[in-house]
Amino acid sequence: MPIYVYQCNRCDVRTEVFVRRISAERAVSCEACGSADLERVFTPFAIYRSELQKLEQLDPKYYQKVDQAIANTPEADPMRHLARMTPFDAAEDPGAPIKF
Image 1 (cartoon, rainbow, N blue to C red):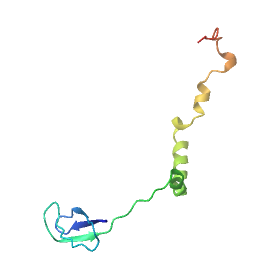
Image 2 (image 1 turned 30 degrees about the vertical axis):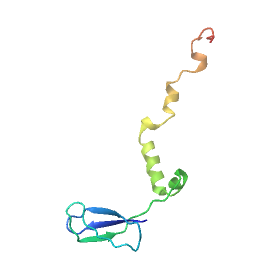
Image 3 (image 1 turned 90 degrees about the horizontal axis):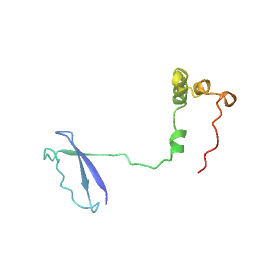
């Protein structure tokens, strides 16, 4: 039971047609303008890819661009937080432990 997609040559609107049998006659008209001047178009199909497969297919230039952007953005450097931290030996005594 395929779904065929047709594109109207008059108004360029795509129309989907559900067909129960492949051998069945199809009287197709445009949903927008009602024209019978339609042309069947091929549509891509979806395949499942995991996140790992998507990452493997990324262009290596993408990684270079990301690294460059991080290097040019000081706010993106995680090590900048270390300078703002107080060392343990310089911190005040927190007091007695909390009992729950």
